Amino acid sequence: MRRVVFNQKGGVGKSSITCNLAAISAARGKRTLVVDLDPQGNSTHYLLGKPATELKDTVADYLEQMVAFTVFSRRADEFVHASPFDNLFVMPSSPELDFLEHRLEAKHKIYKLREALKKLGESFDEIYIDTAPALNFYSRSALIAAQRCLIPFDCDDFSRQALYSILQEIQELQEDHNEDLVVEGIVANQFQPRASLPKKLVRELMDEGLPVLPVRLSSSVKMKESHQSRQPLIHMAPKHPLTRQYEDLYRVLHGETVELEPLAD
Image (cartoon, rainbow, N blue to C red; front, side, top):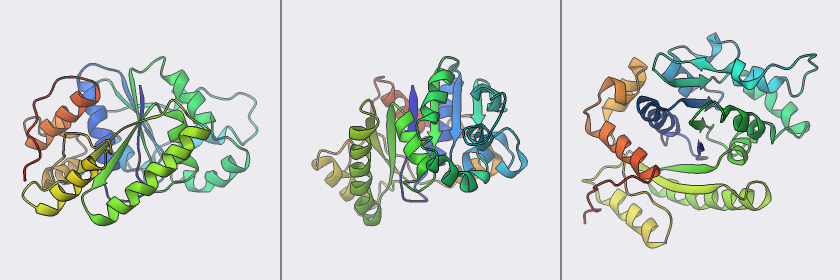
């Protein structure tokens, strides 16, 4: 399964959701790959413990082969790095993605990522794609390459207005480039259950018929500690409530039965 986590708005938890779902997948014994298409490289740093600037054989190096003359192109799996965690691998980001984007777009290479990930799918059970907070060449490539899309939603009105635009953009891309792409759901992130506004916004989205997932990820300093220690929650704090919420989210995405509390008034 190829799953992209996408939102044009920054600070909504794309990298946290990508890496923690992938870590749970790997902890369950599935060979799991994270592809980091954000030039900032947050997922890369989180899972590999090194900034993207210190790494070689990155996703940018792989994609550069598409626009540079090479006698022998290297396979996509040669750009995959093992993480410190069993079964969890990363195709790391690079700041060079920013400089490469125009060349790739000019050469109409937007389907190359899909080709690469389909091939990698023969070796990996699950592939998670992290994207930059922009509808750019790379995020479009990811949406074209993916089979499922998760949309993190930060519970405020600005995020709500952006959400409608995102869904429209995805619908157009589905029609023109990837009819198999399914919006798997909207993930309410940094949710504060005691505050009235987040509950109101989530309920209104549900009333509109939007695919809001039943698991809401709480706001917690534990996530920041996880980033700092370079350990996904399943490894750093396996019994923490936020870890259990991520596990419930993973189960919901995979069709497993989960007992969840209803959205309180």
